[in-house]
Image 1 (cartoon, rainbow, N blue to C red):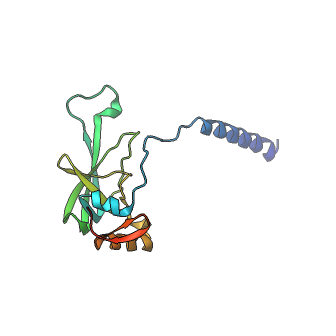
Image 2: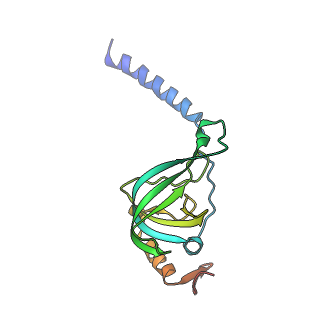
Image 3: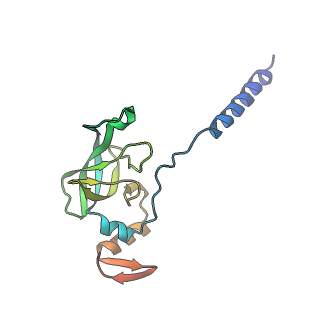
Length: 168
């Protein structure tokens, strides 16, 4: 028996099974974010800062816990070392919450990575998700930084026309 006679059928079988299994996979579709302009994201955020994710903690629900095991997790809390406060006066360390369910828009921070965080104040705590303008600092382009500086300076857009005026 030659190498081709044993490996080729195995390869073809694996390729066929892998393709048929891939067709049965449902993509995660629970998060449906509207397109939000940077100036609007900045205006609705209570805090905007650059910082390094230090640690993540899982916060469990208390009280009426549903019988499904995944429902016991309420959210994650990520502790950040703030390196630059852009809006809201965050300094030192701060905590930002995000949801963790399989059908939500939770933002999952990786400890040790640097982020630009846009967060809103809800129930006395800062929250963010994938629908906010929060992102890794590694992926920020010069054009995005220019736009952020424009917004920080108190400017907005009306359609594609720049306006001089802070958040309403």
